[in-house]
Amino acid sequence: MSFNVRYGTAEDGPDSWSHRCGLVRDTIAQAAPHVLGTQEALDFQVDYLQQQLDGYQVVGVGREDGARRGEFAAVFFRTERFTLADHGHFWLSETPDVPGSRRWAASQTRTLTWCCLEDRMLAEPEVAPTFMVFNTHFDPRSERARIESAALLRNRVEQSARVFPVIVTGDFNATEDKAVYGTLLRGDGSGLKLIDAYRAVYPRHDGEELTRHDFQPDCRGSRIDWILHSPHFKAKQAAILRNMFNGRYPSDHYAVTATLQMADARG
Image (cartoon, rainbow, N blue to C red; front, side, top):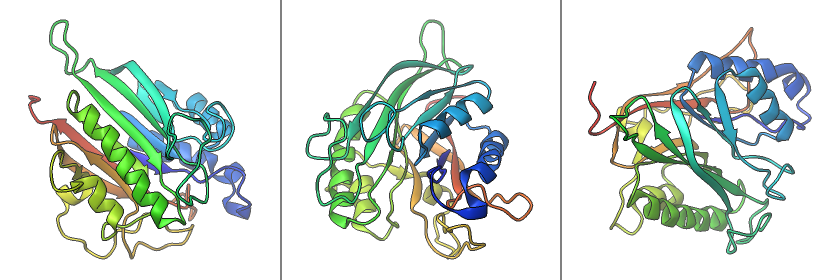
């Protein structure tokens, strides 16, 4: 699941965090994802979700200082199924290992959280399949920043995919007709071919795939929130969750989900 939960200090009136935090929780709880990438959550929002959602561990840092300040690109995962083997963060900039760094005319600092998870459910004796999760949020204003971020992310993903299956979640602030999509999925035409889970399940764009709706009852448009994966997986299902609770939305984005199966998994 990938879910931009809208930052909690936004002055959204009746759609402010205090009025919708329970709706975000309920949306996640109903979907019950094994792995969840969130975008825009501030530290108190991450804390709230960790406290309210049973059975999840979370990894992530604030984008401004690599600790608690600023928005998180956090990854939640179910502890009953997965063991955290490793995790880390980098910034979408020319100096990715420098916390809070920003380049490429980006309007805001942007970061990425990655984690390496061992899947005990699919484990054979003494061997647990391991995969990587990358979760991020691209700049909303600078096309250059998005393209450079996509190239950086793709390079890191390609390195990981030589060893592990890979899942990428995020709000990319770009639709699939933009260069960012092509950079992530196809690169320069060689090497790793990432797969868009939603498009694999629904090959044709039906015109009603909007994922950022700004608290308006609209679905006409295209996705900017994606779940991508390496060919190690096959997408079995995918959805845009247009949840409403008594006429109110949990966020200004619809959450997106995908059910992925290891290509060589049985059952």
